[in-house]
Length: 251
Image (cartoon, rainbow, N blue to C red; front, side):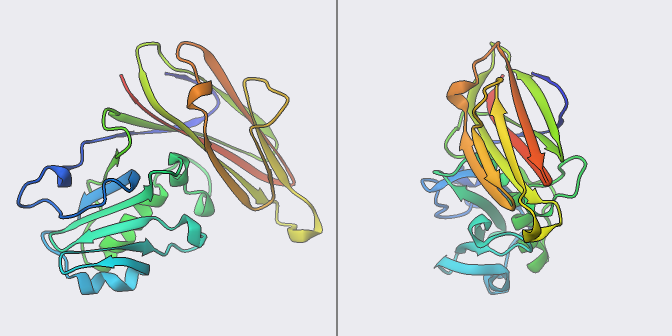
């Protein structure tokens, strides 16, 4: 997959073990509600009472598991992932299946350089810390696309104008080309007006046009043909613009 002028991170999308139906698997995970997810076996067993301080809200509670949203510093409430915690040690963070996988982009606390985490991994890590477990070995899975085996994040951040190009090999099966666009103010607050715009393939019309301190999400799967070079351009005025693609595919 050819790329230009960008920073890339790749993950394996692995078949989630807790759906295997074994005695050690978690129970009643809402697979029909979940989309992009991150999961880990944090420890051999978890005292569910310990997890409650990590939750911003609790949606479902049983003797075997808790599901709720987990608060994350600097993130808006709507960005909080849903998190499933089971007494047999599983922690799974996920966004509902109706949401773009672009929601995993960690824009609110991104400070530059390679992306080393996602909103989902942060949520898992927060809960694992509370219960005295670990997030080491965390994996990703998208319940909407069971045949997807790999995920790649491509992103660009700029205070002016920049772009990157992507060519998807014709042999790849694409399941998602989702995006997230973020516009941050340049530090002048309401004394000035900042914006960021994102364009695809030289179009004069942006597919996302944001004022300062806003985020948008979407999909361009139908616009991203295999074997053709595609260009994503982003510009920013009086601030920083960031654009990220989340590609889910099988080779």
